[in-house]
Length: 86
Image (cartoon, rainbow, N blue to C red; front, side):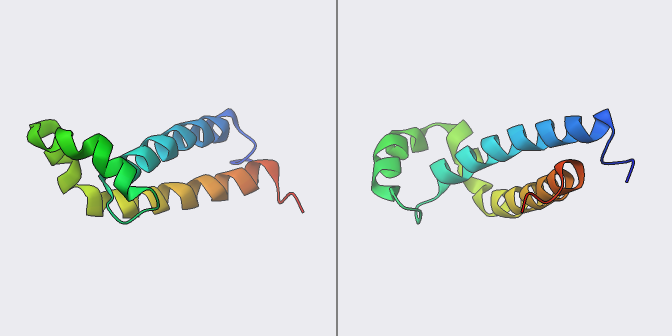
């Protein structure tokens, strides 16, 4: 398809890749059930007194669907642009 061979597709891939990285960090640092949660709690435990962290922590349940949607669209564009590697 010509959509996936355009410069816009490459830009979408790049933007979604950066968004995936940011969302993964936000999910990790607001989650209490991931591997390494004790370390994260030790790091972020003092942050709960700050409103900006509590606000981000309150959106944790919304970050997961945003991350999965972003990963899925990123995968579709990657396969459409580069092709299936196997």
